[in-house]
Figure 1 (cartoon, rainbow, N blue to C red):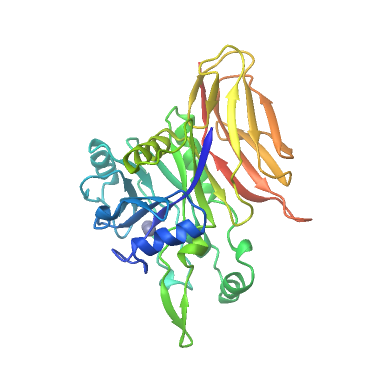
Figure 2 (tube, protein in one colour):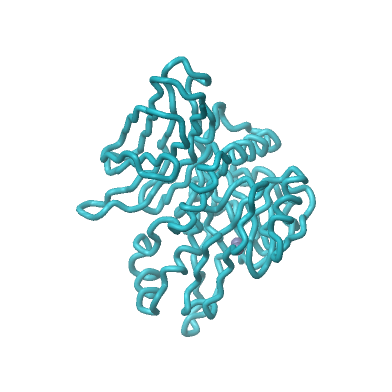
Length: 352
Ligand SMILES: [Zn+2]
Ligand SMILES: [Zn+2]
């Protein structure tokens, strides 16, 4: 199995971001990422700049809708129209065009101290037809926790690692409610990078530069083969992994998620080893295996939205006793402090 770190949900100069795609790709290369997905607001102007830049696969999608129900549409050939009144209609249109679609920051709360409290959540959730949801959006969760100016200053200038503490509970519950009903729903992480340039007391400040955000909430893709050196091949591999859910979210600011794995194997099941996002037929003797890149880990197994097992240490083996939707979470344990939400892996679907 091969894993590749990348960053999804990035704004460039084609909408309200501050960098060119070339500059953003250079920042991604400096952060050690393998791929990035640019999603400017209601435009595909960046599409001609897709390719391999600075060794990074650069893909271009779009973020549809303005005031609410933001939707990340990827693998689009032509821009699709949004629909804030009836988002299901937009979801279906994106699906019919063969593109992938993810609900962006569905439970965004905003902060009374930033942008006059503006937020862009979802109210009407689609029945079906979407690929997944953005479970953890760095910028959005950061803002949502700013409940005083003092907190904002402390987190921004003195303790950035403490500012973000896991994805919204409501997003986790929404994800689990879809998958528990039998749907396959891919969870992704996003940075929502804008690298806004502002002046604070006349001093120019770049709020969360691209390079910084590319070391926060990343989405790692799992491939059975190495990533192609050719752009079209790599593009297909990336979108296949996102469509199928062969990916996990890692808050790399705590510790790199590289080296994490979540698989199922055992019995005479086919496939012999299932990766996250894949299905397996239930039978006796299936084990889930989770590996983390550091012993400072607490690993949790969630079945149909419920915590069924947890254990500290870099590795966990869990014997499956019934069919269900199984996903894995890992918490990072800083020295002498409480475990912090770190990795969220897409489910392995064990069907009857
Ligand atoms: Zn948005
Ligand atoms: Zn955005």
